[in-house]
Length: 134
Image (tube, rainbow, N blue to C red; front, side, top):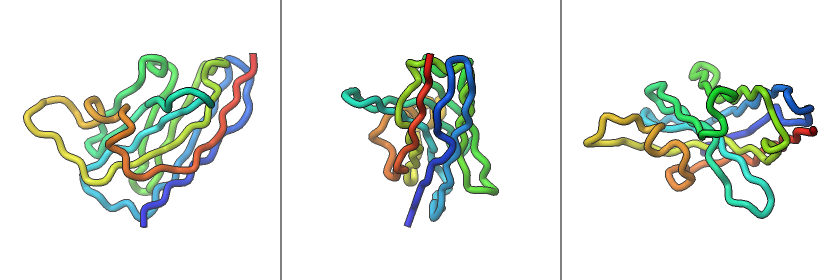
């Protein structure tokens, strides 16, 4: 049984930083994507960043240059380092994992093609609240 559990959310002032963590258990696929999403009440969930099993990463435009996604396979953990936070980053943040995925016929990475889309992800955490005050 695959389980994901986020931690590290909280309240921070604008300009501050937070590091989100996600422990992934029971996930033994050899080809996969791990991602971070966020959702504000009344709005659709949006992809933030993702990393695939080849170590390739992708970021939403709003996250580029401010957020860093990383995976520690030894610890079965996924991280999201968020810097220069603003009130617009206030949301519930979710980590997610796909099952076995593969791409054929393209030189593009799995992360870049699928990483920011919700549909490929099969497993989701419960979410952690991030609140940024101005």
